Image (cartoon, rainbow, N blue to C red):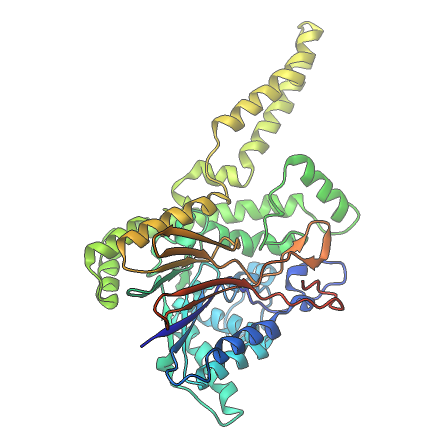
Length: 476
């Protein structure tokens, strides 16, 4: 049967928070896009509706559709224990607590739920590929809660659909001869899971998602640094820019930037080490191999083929202790303290004055610049150059016409060769213009439509940002 695909990723739906001072503006109700999502899906459904030979329509939600990491709320009367840390940064990623988080998100996005249920009632197929921010859907109970919410919305209108129309994919979605869709976090060592097929560890007696560094940072650091947008890269600054950011937002308020960064970094650091220790202790090497082979049988793919796909993944940063230290600027903090101590020591010893001045003013900066040059490595932007290369490898290994990822929030369409295309589906998360927190960057809210109902596939990467001058949210 001929198929038409609509692929969307990185919606980052969370609960709504409105703060008058711009705190956590990325969760503000003024940036809701549920109506635009509904409009896009309705247009997808109505395409070629008058034809006799109607193609099968498939909606692929390609990861990070829900952002469990951004939900900091906790229930007033919880049926389980809530720690002091959870009350500060949000519930742990256990099954029961993730179910509560999902329901909290869906309660603030009723139109989104209705849009999906209408799509299913019309007889179409929904594929949900998990990303790093919605890996909680690994739990069967969370998947059931999602389906129950869709059924409940249908029941209000005496409608329904069959559960078989909804497919949850732990790793990737593959349709031979047509499309390969994967979120992309497994090629980014900040967000990759050691075992994406079974991403849990036993923590305090419960199965918990073994969150990678990027997720832990979003959960523990970002809620306390709410003037940064976790969906953009505006939190990657130099030392002088951080000082200006502190002066602008924190110097004359009760909120703290330096302490929350320092303490939060230590918490993330030790949690990463704790998770890694548990994973190594349980000897997951054999379990990994067994899981990959089971996935190959499920996908009806050759064992060696799936193993080769697995080898393309980037190991988590937890195996690189120095890189973790560097990402939290702990190395630069130590160097700064050593330089200050060295300057004081030089001032106290009986040496010529020119040495006391030249070494701190010229020698120390040169040493620092040499250090920065010598230890350069991967950054959060490395994944943008890696994904097209990975897509090219996949297109050589599998008979597909389109390879699509999300994750980077950078929409792009690149040719991989004759009749083979790589598409990065961008994001729907609110990313605003620099120094203009009310105006969204144009060209986002991206979608990929692929039509295989004709002789040759039609691939379209677009932006669903409607021009409305009166809209204070800055839609363009």
